[in-house]
Each structure stands twice: as C-alpha cells, then as structure tokens.
Length: 88
Image (cartoon, rainbow, N blue to C red; front, side, top):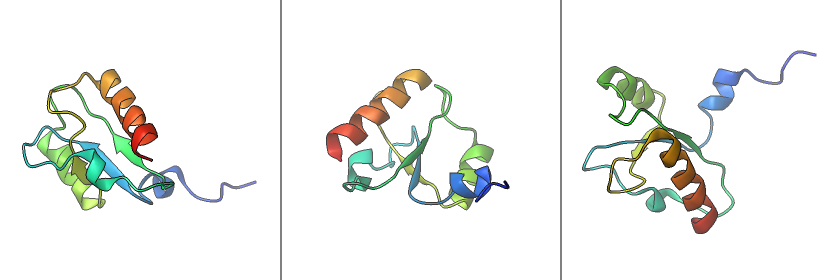
C-alpha cells in the first residue's frame, strides 16, 4: 500500500516551532493549547545557521525559546516534552 501522505508533508503540517537563541523569541508557553499536536525542531547548541532558520521560517515554522539559557540538544528535547506535558 502506498503511504497516505509523505514524510515531508506531515512534517510541515500543523503547529511547528524551532528552538531559537534569539533574544526576541517568544517563550514556548505562549503557543501552548490543550490537546493540540506540536512539533519542535531542535538544533545544535550553537543554534541553527542563518540558512537553516530561513528555511524553517519559509515553511511557516515559528521560532520559540524553551529556556533563557542555551541548552544541549538532547536536554532541549526533554525540556520541550516536559513543557508540553505540563502546559497541555
């Protein structure tokens, strides 16, 4: 059976965010709604490259901040899951 939709189509559908180190990135809690699906793109500890950020923005993905400190990539994913669990 062919897939119902492609991986790329599902990746960019629905609310999606990327962890940003920018000082103007709104906290993730401002985007939380109960019982809604969320996707988060976690980049390297130094942040996404300018080209990567432009690509994410072009796809309609919003920048957000998970924590005021720079987190390791594996820690950022756990913080995101904790925030979703706590705020949803």
